[in-house]
Length: 141
Image (cartoon, rainbow, N blue to C red; front, side, top):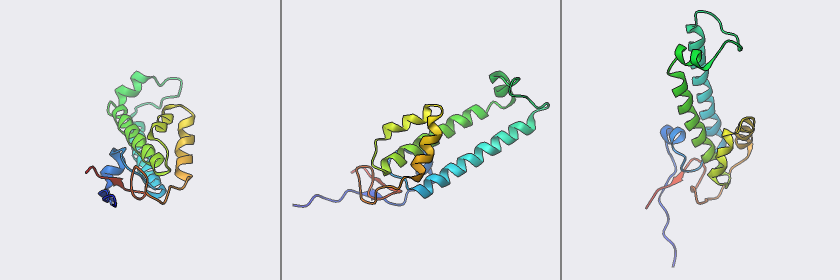
């Protein structure tokens, strides 16, 4: 007796890539999503920098000055942190590891190393419990 095939989504979209921690993600979309996030951060910081009347030094910038000069930037950074967490979880699942290890991105110093290492390790070609192929996920039956 054979087991029935599980339903899979092998062509998810951009919303899945950035918002959902479910499934597997290959190296190329992983790097493309991170490039998109870095461009968004760069544009936001450039807009903030251009809106300042006097150029701050690292000693004079406080949290209050930063938030009052652009109140939406902290929310943007929180959203981008969610995107990063979802990407790292999917990448870990693609290499056959637990998504729980993604919590390492909240450790200062380790986070950059985790992102770089995950972007270089090739994923598993065979199906695993997180999806049939890279850039896919199992659907609930």
